[in-house]
Structures are given as C-alpha cells and as structure tokens.
Length: 224
Ligand SMILES: C[S@@+](CC[C@H](N)C(=O)[O-])C[C@H]1O[C@@H](n2cnc3c(N)ncnc32)[C@H](O)[C@@H]1O
Image (cartoon, rainbow, N blue to C red; front, side, top):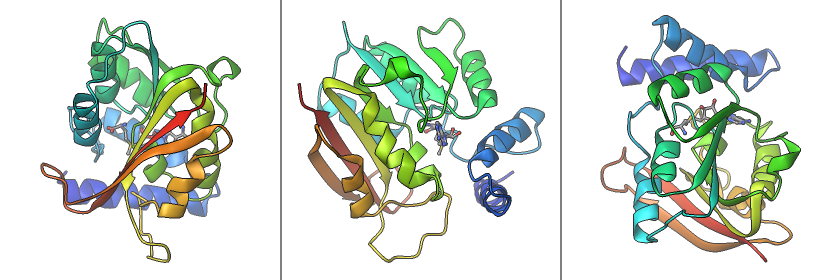
C-alpha cells in the first residue's frame, strides 16, 4: 500500500469511528489491520521523529537519574531514542496492539511499554515524569476528545520537569481535515495551565527532511 493510500485509509477509519461515536477506536483497528497485513501504519518511519531527535540533540538532553514518558508511542522508535539517553522510560499508547508490536520490534528494550489513555492515565503517573514527550498523539486525535487530551497531558509533568509537543500547525479558523488534525496557537496555549508554562515555542515552516508544512515545537515547564 502506497503512503497516500495508507493515509487515505487512516482517514476513512477515523471518519467511521467518529460517525460511530467512538472517535479514538480507529487506532486499534488500524494497528490490528497492519498486524494482519491488510493495512499500513502511515506514520511508521522505523526511526525516531526528526523534530524530537533534533530537539534532544540541540538541548543536549541527558537522562541519567531522570524519568521520561512518551505519549502515543506507537511502534516505539521515539521511546527507544529517549531511553538511549539514560532516561528511565515509560511509553504508552491507547492501542494494545501497538504496544504489543512495539515490544516485539524492540526485544530486550529497557522501555516499559503499556496500554493507557492520556486522558485517564494511572494515578501513579500524575506529576511523575521529568520529561514528557508527545509522540504526535495530540495531532492525531479528533475533537472530541482532543481538548480533553490537551488539558490532560501536562498533568504527567513532575515539578521542574518539561513537556515537549511537536505537531502540525494551522491558523485559527483554517479548516482541519485530518488525521492529522493540525493544532492552532490557541490549542498550543491550552496545554499550559496552573504551574505549567510555555518556555519555548517555535513555528517551523517546511523543516528539512520532513514532508512540507508548518509545525509547532513547544516546550512547557512545571514550576518546582
Ligand atoms: C500519529 S501516531 C504516532 C505514533 C508514534 N509516536 C510515531 O511517531 O510513530 C499517534 C499515536 O497516538 C496514539 N493515541 C491516540 N490517542 C491516544 C490517547 N488518548 N492516549 C494514548 N495514545 C493515543 C495512537 O494510537 C497512535 O499510536
């Protein structure tokens, strides 16, 4: 299946899930179809995200003695990169089939892969991680439930910890035909909240090595 076809199929699955009133059920369906060999996961790069990898490199991030969580880990390539920097890493996804596939793709991994929903994570994770990375989960969700996820993701950040969000960008009022559902500046702002502020926001146009388009790269920090 070509990339265009794979993306079109993902959009059809998302539209059907929204129409059925279960807007995130299409992720599990898509991963299950991929397991069965009847679909392709369109975002499976078999490599870590370019924007996340560049940020880790630019910021010279190291993780020894620190914890990290990857939200919407998919097949685990970002999580493996983060664990390789020394972070004690948890990576979760709403799709149990994705989690099983990530564990198989990275045998012997130090990452703890787990099925969970960012909107209702285990209580032990709240304010629990020095580094929280959005693995394109926010831009993949229709609204609802995206607004709930925007409000929830910051709750994973420990005091003094950081949250990195990368997502496709759109202007307020610009129509959104996803997935992916590009985020507006208002949505980027909505991720911040009491005790969690934006410390850096870049709007990147046609970043090299990526499909053309505008992207946000936002960093948030929780106060101590
Ligand atoms: C666009 S994919 C990106 C996957 C992976 N991070 C990557 O870059 O290849 C978004 C991922 O978010 C997951 N996801 C969607 N909604 C979620 C939720 N509410 N909680 C946790 N994961 C979710 C999906 O199952 C999917 O694997």
